[in-house]
Picture 1 (tube, rainbow, N blue to C red):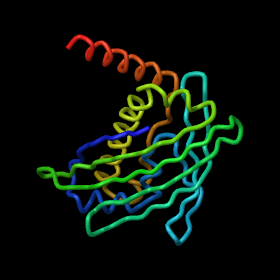
Picture 2 (cartoon, rainbow, N blue to C red):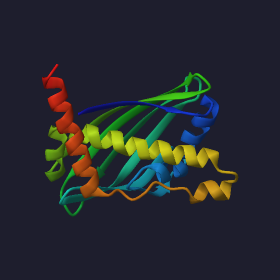
Picture 3 (tube, rainbow, N blue to C red):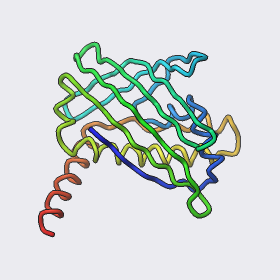
Length: 185
């Protein structure tokens, strides 16, 4: 499944790029993510907890980050396994940071493959709706970290816990409204 998003950040592209190179800070801004370790080759061990209504999964796996400072782009490839639920996930994400007025525009293009019980949620527009909301939380955290007065203050800023049931129902409602909005045109 393809997920594409764009968002703006009220900071210069250089600042946003520098932030994206600080993988521990990025992980702190991803709801449900936990960085477990890093290798010198650009590989990171981590965990991603997902709650979708009554279903939850905790994917453990690895991700590789391949940045290109010249173009302010990067590719991230990751895969993980939910050992208790039997689900598997694989993702390839590319992002690009470009100037936008006095700030920056970030374009994100992800190709996500899910298998196992969690895959049933990938068949609908719910994953796209949920990803929009999670990216909104990510951007709020990113802005707060960049606005912090010190490194210590920035280190305290983290994304909130993913509230699965409320996120699920808000996303479901947005998806349903979108269906009716398109049908009436």
